[in-house]
Length: 131
Image (cartoon, rainbow, N blue to C red; front, side):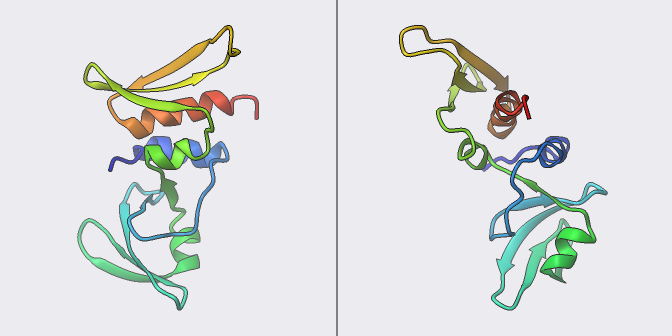
């Protein structure tokens, strides 16, 4: 499953994309560029997360706040925030699309990227440009 790249994750967070509570399998990026995959979300408020080199144990709040981490959503995470938006694979690339028209007069707007999550992020930025 592909996630957005670090720069896109930061732009999404800055633009108001929801930053969920950490869950198993998620990717988070630190401000310094480190990439973390959540391994276990414990019931006692701690998170075990796997970095590129080792397993580190941190308190949940410290993980999010002290490291200035941002959530790196997948295409499906983004599509959940974009009702009516779709995603397809065409000619070796991903296309996220949304219909800005009416039933009788559709107006399809599409966003192309090699990474499905980044294609969906472009659609999210488009849909949220007024905010």
